[in-house]
Amino acid sequence: MSRKRKNKQRVSCLSLIIVAGLCIAALCCCIMYYALQFEPHWIEVTKHDVKFENFSENLPQLTIVQMSDFHAGNKMSESQIRQAAAIANSLSPDVIVLTGDFVHNKPEAAEPCARALSGLKAKYGIFAVLGNHDYSVGSAPPTVALKNQGFKILKNNNIKIAGNVWLIGIDDFSSGWPDPAAAFSGVPSGAVRVVISHNPKIFPKIKDNNCFLIAAHTHGGQVDVPFIPRNYLPGLLSYDYVRGWYYEGNSRMYVNRGIGMVMPPMRFRCRPEIALFTLSRGTPEKYANPYAHKRPGPEARRHFAIIYMAMRAWFKDKW
Image (cartoon, rainbow, N blue to C red; front, side, top):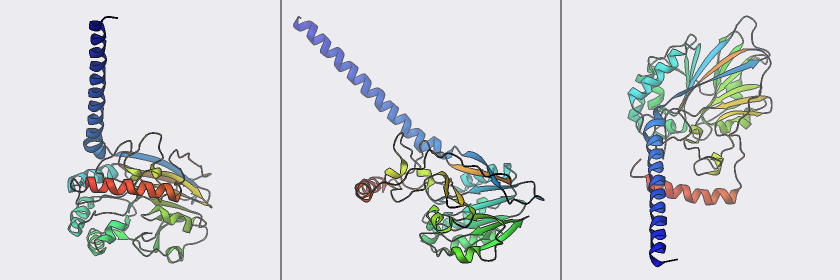
């Protein structure tokens, strides 16, 4: 083969590598733009039928809308929260539950967040529990702001909604003072027990109470890397519950993906979520959950934690 022909082949191969590299770079840029600018604003309404054998025969059904993890004050504006509230209202729910993290890290964000949610409407009322970020700013600002808008905060207590449906609120598992015994106190044994709590880690503590727990906190992982369980990656290494349905004991739990974000400020394959639950009489079903993976062992978690801290340092100025 002549030297001229060899050189021509080398140039052709180099051109192919350059073109491939540019295509990969362009694809990465498109994915980053989508994850940073598009998906975080693309709210998905998920709908779930929740059957109870002991559901009141005098109550045809009861609809509950869940909103969570607003993280107001950082990458989540008052207008964005107001838009989410409009979506919730369009579902005409009987009950609305707000499962914590109204603010991110600024107490002054509590008032705008509550103001944006003030237009929410539900037949039997709007109920809330606080999350770990709410406690990080002292808990008083979110509590006062929500109460001023007429929302009822459930903190280790309960309330009868309609028929034999009771709503039970348990304080945040990691930053509050959760007391399941106090929360369930006075609830009849034959009642339909709907529990709201911010952190899904409370689930093992109440799994034998024949209840339906509505939780959030994890944001569904925010970034869902294909083929890798989300709790094998930094951020959720200590979590067995990431998103969707879980079943333990005689109880079930749904983990919502939330609306806002934490670091890194993006979402990929994990759209923000508003959940609509329709409760009615019937035989309970078990829904498959492709995200139900047990967390990795301690050694793997240690290595992943190092990666996570490096990511936090890199994103610090941007977040």
